[in-house]
Length: 159
Image (cartoon, rainbow, N blue to C red; front, top):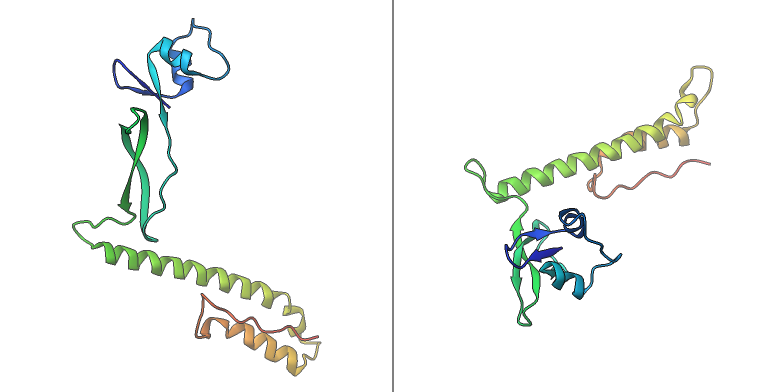
């Protein structure tokens, strides 16, 4: 990205090429090109890591550093900012509950798939062994495990 010296407008290289359609540019912009059209490169420092799981780091404008170079400035924001109706903590709790429900649904789908692979054994003309009955029951009981859905102990399939 580039900042136009005279106006302070920010442009991408593509936008600058479009702004000057009759100008011949090299494949890659260099200091001479920037000086010629009156722009400065905006440096992009490494994006800082958010301080917590529920924070976002976003670009928040540009400023000149101690060397006089333009660079992006980053700001940290809440992922779930409070509203008139709910606090940040309430919004985080709702998000976590939704994530847990999504994970639980995924685990139930996996369980259902594993059960469906053994449905042929439940046909009336096949005698199911006690090991297979126990395996199928253990699959049905997966959602009742104490760590569900974060930790699931899948039963071992009988030989």
